[in-house]
Image (cartoon, rainbow, N blue to C red; front, side, top):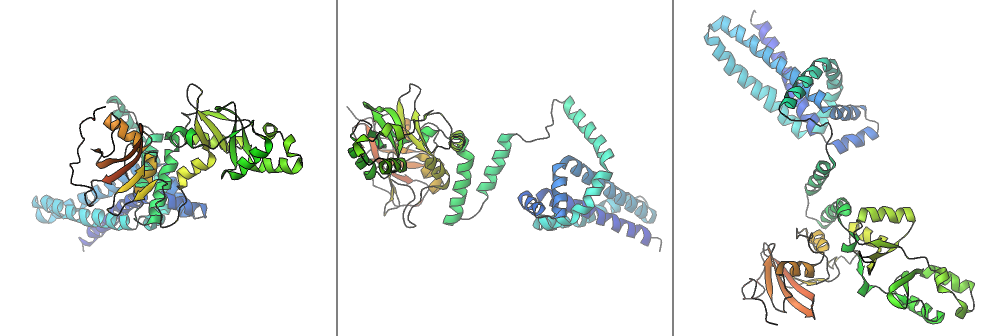
Length: 437
């Protein structure tokens, strides 16, 4: 009978130890987004979980204090009982027995269960842990003061908040862990990554180059100008005077139609009067700032200029939105314009295709810091203007020049070397010597 009371006490202490161990694992492993959603739906237990997470130092301190307290009490009690029965050898027996009991039943077992059912366990233990953390706060606060003071002596400063860069890394890691190889999941990952990249991408990386911009001479007769607008696939068109570089306005097709309806005599139509003034932005503007500027100005169209004021091209609100959601294409087509998948698995890519589009579509990791397009990347890496048929290998890809117009690389055949594909040719995939001339 004498041994039943201490045995029951040890068992109870082991249960408390298991509770603290499981609580620590579940509360730290619970899904914060799910807890936030449950709290918004009125779940009080989820609100307690979020509250405990926000005061994580106090939570961990209380759990460690309680866990160590019951473990030490159980070990001391077992040691006293076994010494009473076996003498000095009882200390060794107590050490072995309590190590096994605590390890299996108070650590591994509850933590294994808690990590597999983190959200469910966290919701159950939160109502108990919340008042316990409050009750033990004076002790844990004193411990934290001692810890912070000790760390400060060694030059370690404790910060209560994660910096923005660390938070963004966590978000990117969570996006990468969004598992699945289906087209829908890959598209979701691409969109989430694109949102985080908005502040790191300049408008110069996504603009429509001036060579591809459809613009209209403001000096044309009104009838001819209306015909030009009707033939264009776009609703907003830059107007220029004397030179295509001299943008004097942006004409909206709907505004033109309203003016034509209101002015029966087409020859008296003043196009510049109905056009909106051009909005010039520097090429270094990042997409996040430009998106906010579009929203605040209620604009959809901007002219991009370089540091010398020369027109580089245009950027629209749709360009930024497509940077997030991607191009809309037929389900059987590659989503990037200018990319064709060949029968051997390689890609025939226009030189103007952006590296960001390729990385997003195929989940590659080609660098885009030094060059925005595939042609630019080849020029940067090769340090020369290559001839048609030359092949280069870098960044674990093989690039073969398929076509070139004057000094512009217009078509490249690409193949990831990591993929198990048929070789493009029997030639060596090494950089050839510099061509003469």
